[in-house]
Image (cartoon, rainbow, N blue to C red; front, side, top):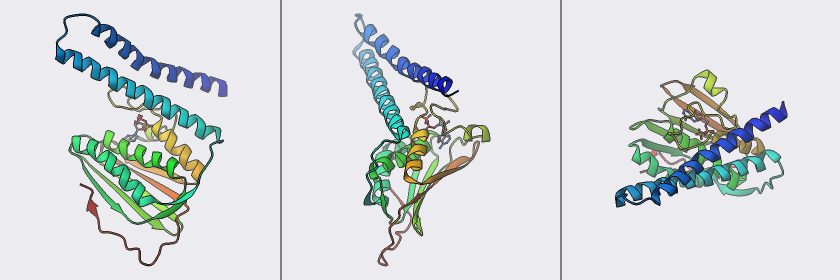
Length: 240
Ligand code: ADP
């Protein structure tokens, strides 16, 4: 059974690699023919560039997941401000949210954490970029961070497409996509990475979702350092 599953992964992986490669080769060959306008040439080059990005992303994600699952990944723990890391992630994703005219709001309280800063950044990036990706134009995404005792509690809610119970039960599987048509960026590794990172860090994740209504992911992480009394939660703000 393990071997069958491994073969299936290899098949999916190869397929996911071949699709962008076929596009890259096709457009590169096309560009060698004469008669295209400058605009057409630019369009084909853009496709080549974005398909190459997709390949890089795929290779990076697959490599990271393999390392995470082999469990021989050095876990470097350090004290850092989780609220700053999450704010940085939101700044990066703000551009895509704005392009889709989505409102992206954040209610981020100060949390100092002892944990793996590098690994955890994948968790917020994947969860919030999924919220943007699976929410139509004009929708809303809200993010929160709180400390509860020794735990950091993070949530991201969206007003997006949501998920059925069936979809929900598979989202942490490798290469799983509810809608595998390649119109959306990604190949179904993001949430597997999130799950593996949280497993390594001793955290947990839960999802509440209904089709057409949206989704809320909640993450609990151990290692929150005692709050200094001076720390006060800032009021809700729109990160724009
Ligand atoms: P990817 O986004 O690359 O497809 P992920 O592992 O990040 O892969 O997610 C797996 C699947 O879970 C997605 O393909 C999608 O069907 C579903 N999903 C994840 N996040 C959301 C969300 N916020 N709303 C609706 N569906 C989601």
